[in-house]
Amino acid sequence: MPANKKLLILPGDGVGPEVMREVRRLIDWMGRRHIATFDIAEDLVGGASIDARGVPIDDATMEKARDADAILFGSVGGPKWDSVGFDLRPELAILRLRKELDLFANLRPAVVLDPLVDASTLKPDVVRGLNLMIVRESTGGIYFGEPRGVEILPSGEKRGFDTESYTTGEIERVARVGFELARKRQNRVTSVEKANVMQSGLFWRQTVTALQQREFPDVELSHMYADNCAMQLVRAPKQFDVIVTSNIFGDLLSDLASMLTGSLGMLPSATLGAVQPSGKRHALYEPIHGSAPDIAGKGIANPLAQILSFAMLLRYSFEMNDEAAMIEQACSNVLGSGLRTADIMAKGTAKVGTSVMGEAILREMDKLNAAG
Ligand code: NAD
Image (spheres, rainbow, N blue to C red):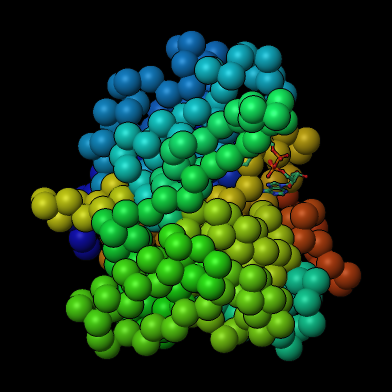
């Protein structure tokens, strides 16, 4: 049994605490079965923290986040806090965590589990077996580049502008995450930019190429223009293993890729920082979906994205690949048995709520564990 790792759990608002409860049951199950135990801290973020402490995330919680080996985040926000003012929004909790822990690589897998192949809007043959990973640079590029603004020209007309900007170091550190991931997968990276029309795109391509030659000659690297990538993701998404791209292109392409899988309630994500000299790497895992205020408190939220985010955490922060694979298999088997939460209901399946879905996962884990 591995040594205890420090895990910080931040359930947040809305359905966050409801789906996180199912992860806690899974963690308890792992302890009971002597598979793993963790040093767990739990704290408030988002609206819950605003209500209790007046800020979306306080300094003490930030300190726990810095100290943790990994953070499991739920979701934040909701209509209750819509009028708190821009500087106090619940969403600032996640922005502060990303900024202060320098979480620059956003990992969004697009995996189609067999039982959900019909949930995609694309033909089953196009998406069956799909398993790709988008690595999006998430702290630089045009969303942060300077100069930016709106100016008044001598003619009196206005001009709005932003700046796409990437340094060698910014490109290399996110590309390195992509290459390292590829080595644990199918060993292929597609680097995506617009080298045909953007100087920063050409520089991105040259930098990634040089890094691959220097540090990752064993990983297959190809390049693709972002517009073509969008088209290829819809035409033949299974051609990709790992896609590495900038903040803005990653924003668009990862949303597109998420819909290949058909459901928001199924999708996990991770945001990683750099490996520090101590060997530690800050990492935060969270579902793609928000706090779903329209269904919060009803006990019907799909817990799978939160559970699969925990599986990602085990794989990428704790190197617990077998345990992660077991959780993913349990999710797939439960769906295969015909159980569905309301958001992924299909003809001929049985509708269940959050906790029944969680219990079904635990029963499946028991079966898989017994089968060894
Ligand atoms: P949302 O993801 O919360 O909900 C969109 C739709 O998907 C809703 O119909 C919702 O019921 C459904 N849905 C989401 N998660 C589900 C689940 N687990 N099971 C079943 N159905 C699910 O997005 P939204 O409605 O645009 O935003 C609601 C709030 O969440 C806002 O305050 C927003 O700012 C916040 N938000 C937070 C995060 C985050 O914490 N990282 C991300 C996105 C949105």
